[in-house]
Amino acid sequence: MRTPVLAANWKMHKTVAEATAFTTAFLPLVADVDDAAIVLAPPFTALAAVAGACRGSRVATAAQNVHWEPRGAFTGEVSLDMVRDAGASHVIIGHSERRHLFGEDDGAVNRKTRAVLADGLTPIVCIGETLAEREADETAAVLDRQIDGGLAGLTPDEVGSIIIAYEPVWAIGTGRTATPDQAQEAHAHVRRRVAALAGRAAADRCRLLYGGSVKPANAGDLSAQPDVDGALVGGASLDPQSFAEIVASGRPR
Ligand code: 13P
Image (cartoon, rainbow, N blue to C red):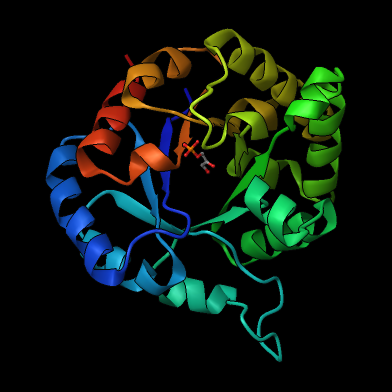
């Protein structure tokens, strides 16, 4: 049995005060959740405050990005030491916005994933095709390339421990969600490819999250798919009540 993961990606939203207010309101709403992992990914500036507010609860925190080098002259970058020091246990890597707006390629995703694992944190590696790629029937090829490139050199044990988020780019922030069938088809493909890369046992352990316009109204049907192990939520995770409802729909039934 894979424990589901419900993760909130706040992107470039919330000041420290707003992030703290969210956490104070949210924690009581999920206090009884012991059968799913909950992860909040605030912007770097609010990471320590949110991690501090979550201490003593079962809610974990994630950074939205990290640099693979441990230190040095990398203006604007944040290291794993810094992220861990702030209290994060997870790191989102290769989000489509990083890939498409900031030029991150599979090589960078791979360096970051390996660095996060070497540091003992859990990477949430994002993959997904654009609308043009889907319409050109290239979804499987794109996912294969991102999986093979992003996870190259990982041991089967490492692959089993990571979280992969399938986020079709055409569904992110558009209100256009993949149907449960489309999500299941893509997730089953991802799991097969992960099995080809790292073996069946690793693929069976690896958690695969769906992301892209997940809302309280559709989270239950998406999470009910056999290869969907939870969600990575953007817009609908900014409100405590809304994200708590998504957590409730993503729990095992
Ligand atoms: P939305 O839920 O706003 O579509 O964003 C999804 C996402 O990119 C999560 O990482």
